[in-house]
Image 1 (cartoon, one colour):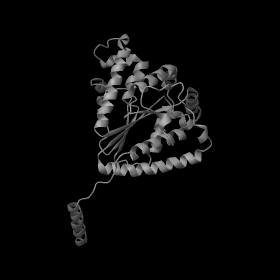
Image 2 (cartoon, one colour):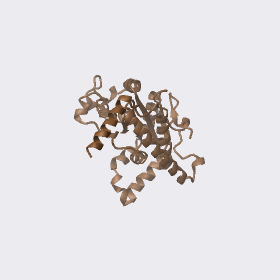
Image 3 (tube, one colour):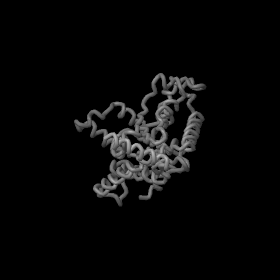
Image 4 (cartoon, one colour):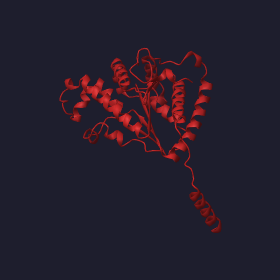
Length: 292
């Protein structure tokens, strides 16, 4: 699969023209798609073992999306084959009072993966240029310098945050952390369909939140916020991947393909065992056998 159509490395993203539906070539191929995803899950497990043993690189996978785009099921499915040791998921919701007492990347740093780990952010620091753009009033409790009222939250403010994020990601990349940023792009019609399912299907009632419906009225504002954020932070080394997500299985295939391609490009290998270490292993084996 060619992933280039989904990759953005500069300010060329036009959200209105970005597809949300599955390509015709993959129509009616759900069984084939599921089989390919299963293969990708097995490959990811192998990559993770080398990643964890080598401890040279850390992997940070970011998922951003409108409500009901399938972030949770995406993570649960494509990561189902990884070893829980060396894997963690962080979910960033409304900042706590402790979070607000620090800079907005403070809680992000505390949840970064270590070398050898795969870390997933279910929403991320990008919320600080998405929801805060749609609802700038939420910035006031943070007591930021020069932000005393909603009118103080200007384009210059967001330009500064975009710069923060680009530099933050550049810093991480320079230190051996591979960042993959995914925007699961769904249509407004598909979101409505999924909300209806949450209301009409008893087993899905627990997923429903009235706040989801309330936020839906800001659809256009969020679309603008995503377009601006992606265009301002898509770079050659830390691109954005915009994934058509009206079909959950197809979106899982694309994301798992991208993750595996990025990991395959790394010089991952099990650490070499020196002659001295091998002798120590043989000595340990001898002691084990002698001890019965």
